[in-house]
Length: 413
Ligand code: SF4
Image (cartoon, rainbow, N blue to C red; front, side, top):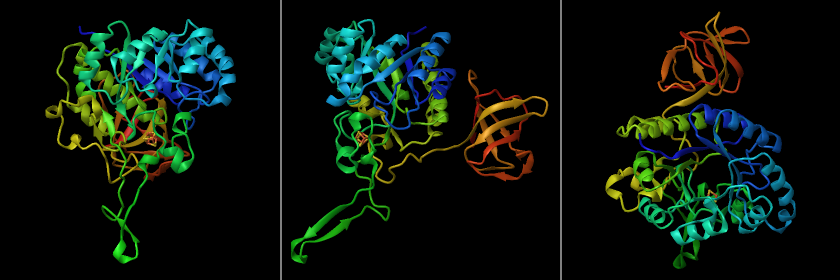
């Protein structure tokens, strides 16, 4: 059996943390908005962080707290209080970027493992050695390093854990050094308030001095052009090379993503790592699995720099000029199973998107490697039969031909 890296998933809430563990994550990262880089769509409180550590211990999983913002003076005085409280929960580590906060953490809670965040932009082995000297136990490498560069870093610094991002949204700017959101929207990405300004539809104008410097818009097509919109990272195909380069942990981006994304991505990377552990060849169907969740289109980022012959022509294109939002997906999320009623063979779900009788749904269940399908034959809303039901209506019941476990996910094929 081959040793494979830890699968580290994001969690924007206690509920998503449990889903990530159920669907195969070895570890989860999460944090409270004040010092973490997710100020929006982050439901964590001190109370749920404490609960999360308890769950991680019960399920024998790891949990890391994100404390990776770059705070201004005004936030520094309150840090010691937060640190004391968060350290008392005994997580497996803090993910940090700011040297000042790292210093305070090392002084006031030396028992806490410090992991250097991707926001600190670690690009080379000298920087890794620097962080090791400061007392960090893990470095999350910059998203801009290649697999070849990771190999060299591992050779030069054998005694530190290395982590890399393998999946999720990616910045068009060097991670952690972006001011676009500040300029355009007055929202600071380094305070966890990024507004994805790079994804905006932008217009370029040209002038012609012979026509009174009139501004004329340049457009790629009628939808304009998304000049700085990066595709999303997907490096599942290169996990063998990443493992052999000496990586200890592979990370998925997406603390603002929904529970379906967390479940499906965790499950797919879990399968890929389990196959790798058993020395099985990479299963290309796993690429299709990841197509089922919304993305901006995929590429393998900077990891495969120098390996262009291994990358498809489509993936050599880094940007998506047509669409800033994540809308490319081969399936639609229908709902998550709240309850299975064995006597009536019904499942209760919170309906997310429209379905109708005759639709075929795919079922993903926690702990089950295989995917089932069934045809929608009966739909009930407030105990009344329906032929069709729209997303957002609340809880509905569906007749099912077999038992479907709680926390299974349904998607429209
Ligand atoms: S605006 Fe875009 S490039 Fe800048 S931090 Fe936000 S996501 Fe990254």
